[in-house]
Image (cartoon, rainbow, N blue to C red; front, side, top):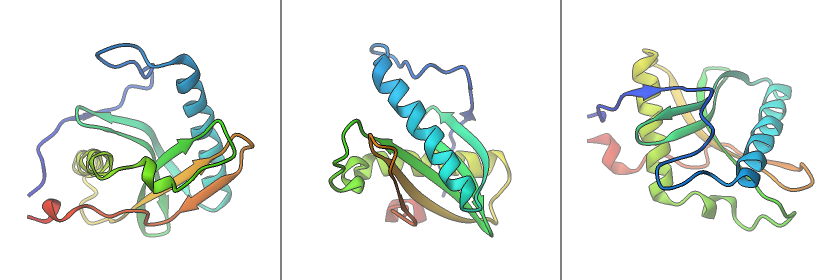
Length: 144
């Protein structure tokens, strides 16, 4: 059963959330990382269909199409060139929020028959990109 959440996309969203504004440098770093990630994906044949899709429960950085797949992409940017394990930056709780936002997106756009994948793109301080296809999958609780 899918969660019943309402999705919205606000391109004017500054990144600020209840509890205080987002750090300007953090937001700028994120926006630059997302721009680099979009260019990277386009060069590899992805069609970008949406960016910064917000719901009450989460956000998707990039929604893209690659062949028959609808791909939800989480972008992580880092100020240093060292990146450890990129998946450590996306713990299970964050993954669940991305999956919930993806479900809202799929329902809102009537894409229920689409094959879906969750990718992660990391961008380091030097602009080097790492793309992890099928980086995570919905947890078992989404298949009830």
